[in-house]
Image 1: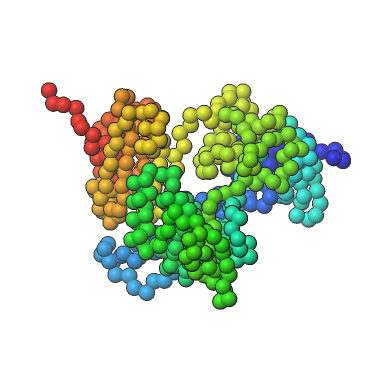
Image 2 (image 1 turned 90 degrees about the vertical axis):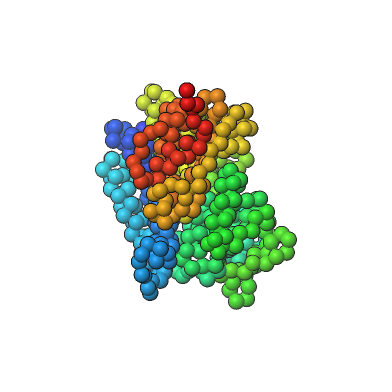
Length: 464
């Protein structure tokens, strides 16, 4: 290392949700802060993940509603999906949020550096700038928040076949007539159903025994039934042997048992890998695990002094709201009132149509943990608001501890489930018994009112 490094109170490497929020917050408090970002102002969520995909999910849902408009008493003719308009819609949403983030950065007083960072010593990075120059920056405290990127597995022919990742699919110039999706996890199912709504013939190939393998089997089965009704060809327990580019430009996926699936495009959605390889973390004294994720303790401290990691790169649940909570965990230590990640309750939503929202334990997880449980289920068709929406597909399920009557977990597959799950989460955080939701006076007709109906499935107290 040559030359004196520029000195800052806090150096944040990577501008994901945790990193950018921490950088702005600390800068507003009067500390000197350098935020080094490769180029995506606002992080991957705004640029290539949550925000653009959910903008397009909105378009896909509108297409589905137009297709079923007659059920709502509307005669709609002549509509079509226009890929240029889709892209403009997505980019308008993204550009607006990027501009808002850039303005917030400026107003906070942080020092934004665009470039690729590489550690050369503890809490010290050399930044390769876009113009070819470099800068040496050191922080008294340092946070790594570089996120993840789509994982490309070592499938023969994959590199040569020109497959797409979720990042690439957001930039397509035309809609594929046939789309093959490798992976039946969250990203795979969201894109599969989205492109089916846009008119693509979609095949999903999943190596595991079912879609969304971390979900309760009956919820996964319900998703599979919805996909079948949407015309999506789902092939589970199916490995991929190789991928080839056909002479006509199409892509052939050859399964492990010799079947062939031809498509105009192949999306690889089999997980994400941490952005750590290019960081030279050894020079910083920061340990990573065998998969490349930064090793942290319950306070998100790394193996190096005064160095933390946050968000996906630290192995936190891969959700923006989890990364935001990582910011709170680290900020609390800067303030001298440390809290930890231990025991936090992280909900999430899979933005299929209908949505799948989850919090807490599945039935199998609860039993494996030694709980004596009661299980309640409710078909979404039983909820009055679902009928007014003409969105009656889905199943709600909750798991209750038999001894305490507390809710251990819930899976809500149905319209607006992502909004309803917060009510369940808050009841769990407060330690309320399920009866609090069963007996709450909830506005009629709303989807949240379904919680009254769900928990009423349990036997009521005896009449005396």
